[in-house]
Amino acid sequence: MRKFLVKENLSYLGYLMSDTFFTFLPKIEYIMKEYITQTSKQKLQGELCENEPLAPYTTWRVGGPAKHLYKPASIEDLSFFLSVIPSSENVVFLGAGSNMLVCDEGFSGTVIITNHLLKNVSQCDENKIYVEAGITLLELAYFGAGLNLCGLDRIAGIPGTIGGALAMNAGAYSSETWDFVDEVKVINRAGEIIVRKPSDYKIGYRSVNVADGEWFVACVFNLTPGNKETYLEAIKQMLAKRASKHPLEFSNAGSVFRNPPGDYSARLIEASHLKGFRIGGASVSTKHVNFIVNDKNATAADIEALIKHVVAVIQQDHGIRLLREVRILTKEGIRIDHGE
Ligand SMILES: Cc1cc2nc3c(=O)[nH]c(=O)nc-3n(C[C@H](O)[C@H](O)[C@H](O)COP(=O)(O)OP(=O)(O)OC[C@H]3O[C@@H](n4cnc5c(N)ncnc54)[C@H](O)[C@@H]3O)c2cc1C
Image 1: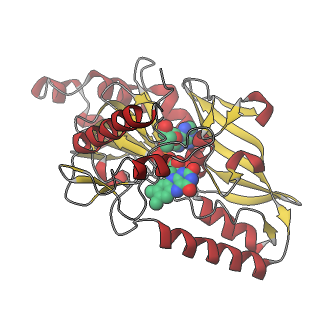
Image 2: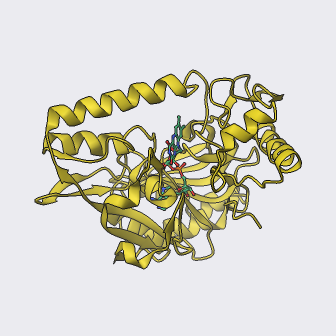
Image 3: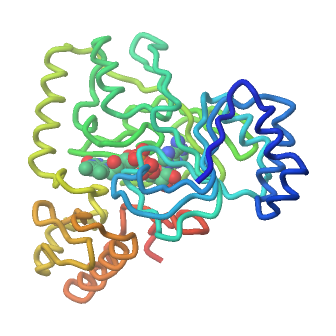
């Protein structure tokens, strides 16, 4: 693992990436050389890591490294970064990694992390809050409470970032992220910023048709005026309720499967006696059967094998094909389960 702090001074970095250096280390990737050649003209402020293990960036705590990982200092910095890396470079975004299974082989492109990096939040109109993608739903809810702007209590306990919540249309107790969206700011692969409205998207249960090569960098939330104390109490109650139902003592990624129409994945899994079923270091939680927990140093392969096993058993027992809610990051990119 190598880390470069791309802050004020690029001279050392310039040396590392010079032709002389490359002569001695011919295996260093072309992309890094290209990246530095271009950035020497302008300054980047974020942190670029090479061969960075991704497990610590996910809540399942499994998975291999990303070839490159970038921690942007701001939206402008991210914009510049995207504009200077080669257009052939495969890019994926990661928020809190609370809905992502990273394969043991890792990812062969660049991961951009937003969690607690894109973190500006401000009131932008009477009932509206501007929030960047790396803030968590809970942080947004608490910020709103300070302004007596309410409404997020049912989803505040979902442990993801705004970017991840928008990408997933994260929701709980009949409340979903996009219920509150006034507009979003997206960034494309060239680093250009575009403002979009909810009407630009097809939004469904845990799904949003985000265009390939576009990611959320900020959002304006429309909230409801209310009483701060009542709202904070509602959030507290909701957090307690979730903690009592979820196996938070083990690494997990929340519900693994989406509910099929008119039914519950948990009911089907329980009916098939899969509670506690184990493959390697991963098991179906005994506390919430739609969760798979990493309770004995699981590998990503253990978790993926267990997911496949559950899908096969439910198909056989109930004739229903469960769709994964969690996404899988392979060497080539993100796999979303569309049921094909
Ligand atoms: C204990 C626990 C409880 C959970 N409970 C719930 C629940 O009640 N309801 C629910 O819906 N989910 C739940 N989840 C799942 C998860 O928290 C949500 O899906 C959350 O919205 C994911 O956000 P994230 O930032 O962690 O996204 P990540 O896991 O980092 O990424 C998820 C997807 O979003 C994409 N993405 C991330 N950031 C961006 C961005 N800025 N722009 C575009 N795409 C982006 C990623 O590429 C990936 O495809 C739970 C998870 C855990 C661990």
